[in-house]
Image (tube, rainbow, N blue to C red):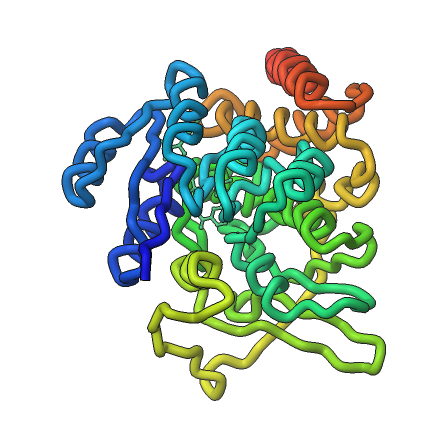
Amino acid sequence: MEKRTVVIVGATGSIGLQTLDVLSKLTFFKLIGITYHSNEELAMRIAKEYKIENIVCTMNGLQKLFELFERLRPDITVVCVPGFVSLPITLKAIECCKRVLLASKEALVCGGWLVRSWVRKFNVELLPVDSEHNALFQIIEKDVEKVLITSSGGALRDWKLEDLEKATVKDVLNHPVWKMGKRITVDSATMVNKAFEVLEACELFSLQSDQVEVLIHRQGIVHAAVFLKDGTVKMHVGYPDMRIPIAFALTYPHRYYSNPTWPDLISTPLSFGPVDQRRYPCFHIVYEISKDYAKRTAYNAADEVAVNAFLNGRIKFTDICKVIIKVVEKTTGTCRDLKDLEEIDQRSRILAEEVIKCL
Ligand SMILES: NC(=O)c1ccc[n+]([C@@H]2O[C@H](COP(=O)([O-])OP(=O)(O)OC[C@H]3O[C@@H](n4cnc5c(N)ncnc54)[C@H](OP(=O)(O)O)[C@@H]3O)[C@@H](O)[C@H]2O)c1
């Protein structure tokens, strides 16, 4: 059997490294290219270990990556870079590959309709890597009434509300369930990540936002559920280990990845609870802006800027949501194509910086 060729965009990150780990355990794939942004040392180590000749640094733009896609035309591309930049990367990957594994939810948050129309135009498989969406992909049926995606609640889920503004970067990066990149870990504490995932679910499974319920589930082993009209609820359960959804998306429709460790259901009683609006003030607004791509793009841009400002010690944890709410409130615009979105993204970043200065 001929091996399927793979390119990883963002190989030096958390998902990128876990994809490498999965690939090292599967025999049907040949990694032919990787990208990195700033971590050259790690990229070179990966290239040496996996004997990869095609290595692209994205620090100076995406042109070299696009040339790589055109030249290699891989069977599979894994897109796992954070932020708006994942949108143009995903669109180009769809043009040039047969299957795109999408970890970068921001591409769907900002340009979901574009991604969907590219998938149709180029007749490509788009498979979600995000654990909740990968789970939904596995259990969804045609006529679902609603779906559930779960959230751990992030690192500060048990903090007193009045203490949240004192949270340090170290506190926020101490995620109770997952080990991930910095931005998504901060986004988990604010539940911006879960807001993104509501939109991601709408785009991937043609749902309205009010069909996507989110509950806090502390044990982290139920990733998603679907509610069917005959009263059936199908849940997807498994250890929180991103290598499982990555492997499933790589090998779909087969399950070639062997990892026989299942949650112990006797010692893990399951609990579910509602999302507290006071603890996560910018989660619920996603339901109001779900049909407005300009505000969605602003939401992502403001979050990107605010999270960086928090990580660099410029603002408090609780300021992140203040910045997002202000920027989303002030952003309007028409979204016809990628150029429109890029313009809104840039404008929202400038606005977010202005809001930060006035805090
Ligand atoms: N981590 C998870 O468990 C998880 C789960 C579900 C979904 N996701 C999603 O997957 C994406 C990646 O998350 P992650 O946790 O893997 O992030 P991460 O650990 O921060 O890694 C990000 C990767 O993207 C590269 N990168 C950073 N900025 C870039 C830019 N402007 N242009 C191109 N490449 C850039 C980084 O390169 P350098 O390191 O070389 O700078 C690195 O390879 C995010 O959209 C996240 O929401 C992650």
